[in-house]
Image (cartoon, rainbow, N blue to C red; front, side):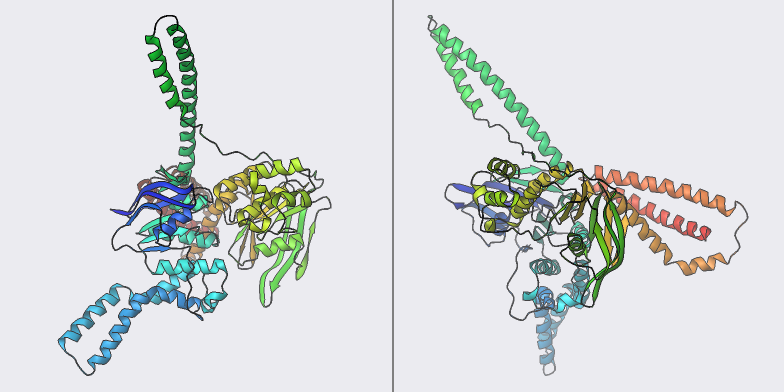
Length: 624
């Protein structure tokens, strides 16, 4: 069954410039589809047309009868004084209407118990139970906890919340409404890792249809079953997740490039042949003119094929400052809080040259505050922090500012970087600022464009400690890839705060994870950290059975192998199972687009984890 059908959709905001130009696609019921394309290609415009907030100039949109569409990017205006809790409860307004009618009937039945009233009441009671009326509080708490909407936020006026908090709250409301078709426009932008993982799990079990616009490549890999790329106002289809899309797009590009080269070679061959035939025709064979004209028509058709365009790679490199000494950054006994709330205390670490550290954790756990302590924008409440004597640092903050927002991007480069006009134009071009774009006032740039411009400025400095606070926020996929290309060639120390798991996985060699005021310092890649964290969860689950293990320790051990040999045997068995789990993780990546295979792999992993947990319990019992 088709949930959404889009046929020959055309939309323009300027005469002669169609942002959508004959867009057509269909989405089957229950599909999860990623909508891809650079900023400005028409993705959000498409969503607004699907919800009826915007009219198309031409074409047709059909939604399956009876299906409700919910859009996450909408920030509706609620009545004055409404709290976040009121917004959450508004998701059950249809349930409340049923309950209200039931209460009205209950009052009437005190005076009149006619069969008609009883029948209506029974029907409404059945509807109320079917709609989950007795479980609304449980549903609200489950979704609110998953998206980290705590009791304090739920009591606040909706108007006083930040844009990110309002977006999160709106997502929770849509989920609670049990909408059949979800349109998600950048749903992960304001969510931390834990909330994103919760959302991914929810969508994987969601029985309805999902269309998501996202620049979070990991999220698209997990959630999307297929991708639709909007290119030049039309749709390109890819029958897999983001990783499949990347490979398939490159394959199609190579195929088009080879076909274009063949066409050019054929044009050259036919041109020479046509010229020769015209020459021979002048020597007395008029029939050769017709053959030459036929060739020229074929040449005209072949000439219409356009050369496929490939995204330009960054040509600018960071200028690095020679570093002497081992210690880049040292901290001891750091403590920081605001008011009665202590973010972290007794924080100590040493950062050495050429390390790449990812700082992760929940929103509000202290990540950005730590960055401000390092840059000197905040002072610690206790302890100290020091940069090495030869260290020169630079920081790309979340909120990017410039000396004068009224200046153009070009003038800002000249004033703040003290570079030549030609160097300014070259560096701006490498970051996508070309033509008239360089003369836009900084105040008119989007958040992503401001981040790109600031990074472009930083790249000209002699720095050996680069600090990035949420560097990929507000950047589309192309801009993220540009940034990654630049950072790949940066050989000095990199410290960055991020929720972008694709970015973290690519760069991190050390993980700092904030949780409950503590900092876990893990030396290794993000994949290794994730595997370690999963093992810690298994240990924690095993520890809950401590009373049983104490009881077991009082029982005499059976005769046989010594405890030491039993431990060795258990450790070998644990190592064997861990290798099998790692192999299954690789299979899960290989079958990322095959839902049936993924389910089989997950079942095997669950069985192995159960077996591994039992072995951990035995190992702990013997070791104690």
